[in-house]
Length: 130
Image (tube, rainbow, N blue to C red):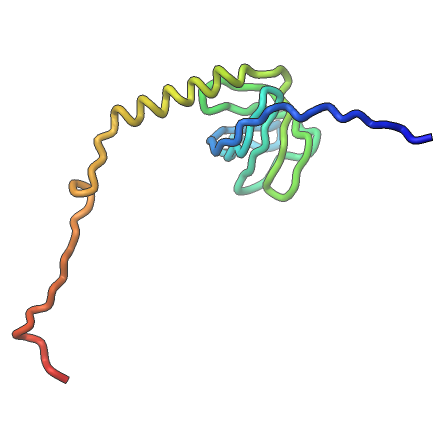
């Protein structure tokens, strides 16, 4: 007799590149890059030591809130964590959008004022013929 396995659909993930700060009992605060995030967890990468599977952690999200979590899997420097309690993902996305809009309104970046373009043209009279 064949057993049917019903897989639950994966939770919707927001593909983002965000900065976060994570700490565990074993590791002090270290920066992570969040690759994707859902209401119940995230996938991230770090430069140095990654957390261990089953290790409890706290992660500070880009909107400033800190969430408790447990590491579920690790492959090299890439790892997945599950939050202790689900987060309001829509609220996080809206906060990130507001922060981005604010940064765009307050920036007055202009290429000409930041970089001087050197236009080197040799003096034709001083050039030697070869």
